[in-house]
Image 1 (cartoon, one colour):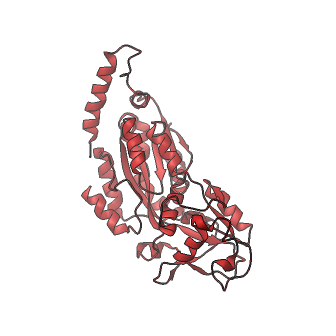
Image 2: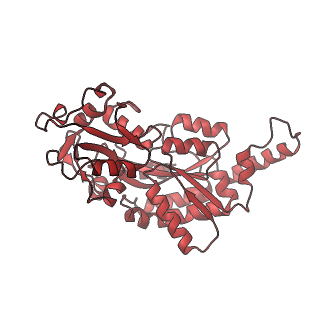
Image 3: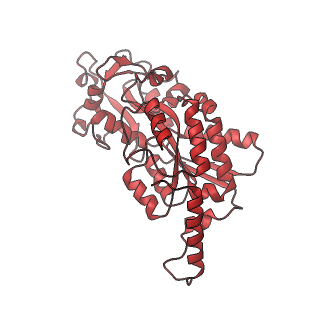
Length: 348
């Protein structure tokens, strides 16, 4: 259900009035997160979530603090999309980055803690499959081959490159991938294996994509996956594989994402903003305003695909009016295009 900031203000006022009429030990006291939201002197902006979205948010935070001249104390961390939502829905952060939409269980957790959220798409990503530059046998890979590598049944069994494709050499296959707190893990497993969170466990996992980059860059037998920004930043250390979903192999790039060709590994990236904190903490409001205005430039600078101008205009309108909720149905969706995302935003 969509709720405006005006309605939230009325609700918050009612909660505050109720809290004033109860005893200190009453179970109906105002929740800690709502108490924090009313502290207008708080100049902190607490951000966590997706390691994929992290490069964008970090770039925005640096630009904000270097150009705005305000005293906001901005902390940008990452613990994965899932880990970020755990903190966000507990009222511990103001903004969380997400490499997939909020899930039903996370929506329920936010609702339980009276955390209303504003969903703002900020970029598109080409989830990248990469190998070591010395790998001279693999130039492309099919979705079916990726499944053969990563499905639970592969654990302890698919351990050589030639088990995936007969023409590839009889060499050990070393896998690197995101940890289970990652939205990239959720999306990759659904897109490749066909079931969210279904994966073999015998691989090197990390919520920090830089750890994956370093591992692959030092191991000629390695293959891994992570957000496109990390490929762009490390092109001398990595080689991207073209992905074939049955319609021909497609290399990840801005052009193939914008043309809806890099499927099923193209996906939108988001920030979610605590609506109460945005209303009551000027530092949060100013930072998110700045984020949305600077996103087109800074998204490109860190290697992701910016959205059309219309999308950021809609973001600004939704943030200004305090439009809370999600345009998704509590699950990650495959093969969503930029135009489809725009259509949903416009209807929201």
